[in-house]
Amino acid sequence: MLVKNNKNSILFFIKSIWLDIAAVMAYALVIGTLDHNTILREIAIPLPITSIMGTIVGLLLAFRTAQSYDRWWEARKVWGEIVNDSRTLIRQVKQFMPESENDLKEFAQRQVIWCFALSESLRKIPFSQRVVSYLEQHNIMANNVPAELLNRHADQLAMISKNFSINDNKQVQIDTTIARLNDAMGKCERIKNTVFPKSYSLLIHFLIYLLTSILPFGLEDSFPALEIVLTLVISSMLIAVEKTAIIMQDPFENSPPDIPMTALCAVIENNIKEICSDTAVPPVQINSYYYIN
Image 1 (cartoon, rainbow, N blue to C red):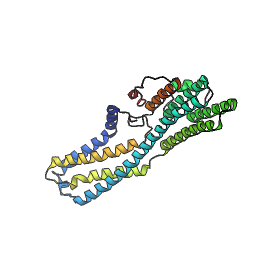
Image 2 (image 1 turned 45 degrees about the vertical axis):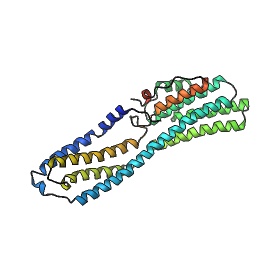
Image 3 (image 1 turned 180 degrees about the vertical axis):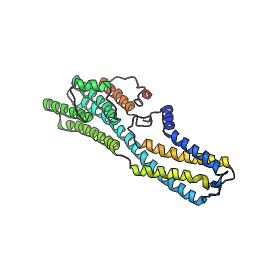
Image 4 (image 1 turned 120 degrees about the horizontal axis):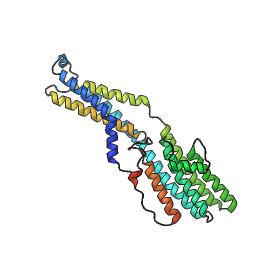
């Protein structure tokens, strides 16, 4: 599920690049003017050199963008797995365990809180009031709260299995689902904590500005206005592509372009309520859960 929030995304993107665009615009105006009125007009860089530089920058940006999108898409697939396994877990608890409304309610509530706690810990923001209230009510204190919540799932499963002699195959299926949720959490933490190589980013940034600095001297001098416009447009496109890659490489940053985890948590909660009650639950207003300001 991709949540549309075009207005916030566009504004966020513009705020991210406007300083770079302003710097390029100032440079293009100054150099474009001086290139036709001072000794700078004698400087001419052969077009093949500019073309080679542009090709190198383009290839590096293509690779960088592909790698960044792979990180974003992997994060989105992991959260798709979380949605599926959350529904599967509650369905299994409902069907495989002895009929106990309290046990089902505990699993369902804990799974919803786990989803919200995981999304908030990945964004490194304070836990919401509902998560804090749940943790205080159940006396849960841990450095990794989502991991502890999954441990509580496993502990309750073991206790129920011991008291009611649940079929071993059914117990294994439920435990396997909990293990898959734990694996998904680990994948999210790996993506969050794996930093994209800074040297690679600095190299691309340096090459873009190097290309921008020599571009006016490699263009035709007959039309000053066209030279300024081309310098601005070409450089702005490269900067915009680079910034897009930088934004996508961190899918858990609590910004409009990140994974809509809060929206997905709300969908999970809605689905779990329907599984527990066997009745239709009003659909969630997705846009209101896009990200947390």
